[in-house]
Each structure stands twice: as structure tokens, then as C-alpha cells.
Image (cartoon, rainbow over all chains, first blue to last red; front, side):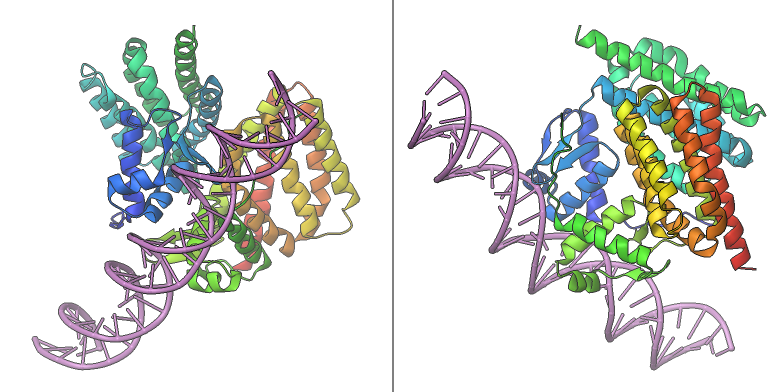
Length: 222
Length: 222
DNA sequence: CCATGTTCGAATGTCAACATTAGGACATGA
DNA sequence: TCATGTCCTAATGTTGACATTCGAACATGG
């Protein structure tokens, strides 16, 4: 058996993790500037490492930087939501369709485990449930066995987290009401043999999330 | 009218361009190591800028780097081809479907211009035709108006270039025979109102390229 | 009052020196 | 002979100092 080789990480990835957490915490709200000197001081690393970490976050789409104008956290405009979820729908569709033929029994079992874990944690509303949600989709992408597809997913993954975090904080009811059932349905369909239905369901799963968030954003700017 | 703002570039992007060209030239064949000190000396910039440029190329999927193990040009294995073209098919499908409803008359005209330019340059076989091929798809993605989708395309674009370059060098006949017609068909369908047919055609366009390249690779290892 | 030119500060872009690591060559022992 | 442990070197990872650039505030001229 092949272990996933113990990859040592550099200070850049470490810094990226810290900054990403801080963004999810709300320490750096959308639109906030991320100054290299301040971050370097707070994280106790050099500016070079922070700079490289910010480049990683930019690859994830969480921040945006321009020449000599610094790095800022991305906004959450309806346009952004529309773009991210549209791309995600296409990627999820492909991942599900691929997994339909390539998923191993272990992969399928992992999906079920996550769904049952979600059902167990349904009362503890909060970010933990979101983590399971994301983990489920991570598992689907992993089951597809396509590393480029995984990369493409990682380029929108953090943005999806940020958006969903906001959605859940504002209106947890409809999220809690549907998460388990929707993911259970996906897990079942990936085991089945109806590619068309699976493709439509995977896309619809994303689009419903998109609509929910857009409705929330629209209500916010009333 | 809004010009696409004259973005000043740093030495990192400049270095990335040079190195990318060198990879396409064959100066750095697949699997070749890209040493920071050598590149810094040759390009007459600091190692930091080269390092940042290599990070950009890694975002494009052209190179791969690991902790303290340096950066190397990616290989061109059947697995890699399969992965890239599968993802590209999904992205092209989405881009075409989106462009179907969002493309402006200018966008459509740009597509036609590229097709006619391809027909004109059909006798001068070589990398110029490939540039037009890529430019066509760039235009489709641009017409979709989805910047995240454009980003996702850029994450596989250079790899597609590298792969197609190899395919054309080995067997230009079937490429030359079909490029113009296939792209003309796409340009027409994007103007039409048959989403299903457009989606299938866009995907098939990619899959035929994939099959051609895989056949070539298989013949190489006889 | 508006438009243009200038100064200034704060931030990023760039660089070269130092620290750390991976992987191979070599020696040692069973 | 093979396995293990120890250097050693060439590369990357990291750092702090220096150079450059942007944007805003201010001054100037029409």
C-alpha cells in the first residue's frame, strides 16, 4: 500500500493556512487589505514567505492582488457568486460522472461515512457541518482520480467555503433542512447507473445553493 | 469604452513568459529540471523573481515543484493527456453554453475573424495555426464573461498548447484537415439556439483532439 | 472653481547573503 | 552481498536591506 508521502511544508504554506483561517474568522472581512509587513510581523516570518503565501491564496481565488497595489480579500458580490457557482456546477458534474465509473468500494464507503457523520452532527449547527459538506465533495473529486480536476476544484473551493459560511450564518434553516438528504441522494446516485440523472442532480445541488445565497445577498441590500 | 487597462508587469511575469517560451521551444523538454540559479543568471534577474515566475507557471500546470526538490517541466504521459482533456471538455462545454446567451455581436465577429484567419493561414502549417486555434477558444471564454471560468481555462491552457504542439509536430495532416471546419461549426452553433447540440459538439471537439494525441503517444512507445 | 503639476509617504517589487534540506557517495558492519 | 549509517554537495528555503511605484494631499495656474 502507498501512503500519501509525508510532505513537509514550508513557511509559505503555513502562512497561507493562518491567513486563510483569519479570513474565515472574519478577522479580515471581504475587501480588507492584507499588508505584507503587518502579516510578516504578526506571523513572525519574513515578508518573502508571506508574499509566497498570499500568492497561494490568490491561486485559491480568496484574495486578489495587483501590481504595486497590494493584496485584498475578495468581495462577495452577486456577480462573484454567480461566477463561482456556475464553474463549480460544471466541475461537480464532471467529478460525479467520472466517479460513477472510477470510484472504488473504499471511496463509496467514505462518502457514506461522511453522510452519516452529517446526520449525527445535524443538531450542532455551525461550521462543523460545513466542513463535512466540503469533505463530501472533496471525496467525490478524489474518487474521480483526476488530479487536474482536483486542482480546478481547489481553485474555487475556498471561495465556496467563504460564500457558504456567509449563507449559513444568515439563514441556517433551509441549509440544515436539506444538506443530509441532498448528499445522501448524490452518494446513492454515484453508486447507481444513471449518468444523466446524476449529472442533472449534481448541477442542481450547486444551483440551489447559489440561489439561496443570491436571495440572501439581495435581501441584505434591500 | 473601457480599454483593458495597461497593466504594468513585474519581472516575475516577464520571467514566466521567457521560461514558458523556452519550454515550448523545446529548450526544456518534458521532465527537465528548472534550476533557479541558472535561470536567474540567464534572465539576468534575481532568484526571487525567477521563483515567483516559476510559481506562476505551476499555476498554469506547465511545471511541477516539490519541497526542496526543485521545479521540473511536466511529463506528457497518457494519464496527463486524459486528465487535461477531460477537464477541458467540461470547461469548453460550459464556456460555449454560456457564450450562447451572453456573447455580444462584437464577440461573435471576433470568432468569425479568427476562423477566416485560420483558413487563410492553412497552407503555412506550424505553430501559427495553433496560436489561432487557442485564440479562438480564448475568445469563446472571454465571450462567456465569467472571469472564474477564464481562470480555470488558463490553468490548463498552457498544457493544452504543449500537448497540441506535440500532436501537430508528429501528425499535422488530420489536424490541418479538420481545424477550420470544426471551429467554423462551433462559431455557427454559438450563434444558434441549440444548446444541446452545441454542448455535445464542444465536448466532441476536445475529445477528438484527445484521441488523436493518445493515438500518437501509443504509437511512439510501440 | 476646475484642471494640472508636484511632493511625499507608505506600501510593494527586487535583490544578494545566509540557513536548511534532499539525495547521493562513501564507509562500515553483519 | 546487502543493509545501515555518515558525510558532503548542490540545490532550494528564508531573511533583511534596498529600489521602485502608486495614490493622495497639496500647491499652482488658468
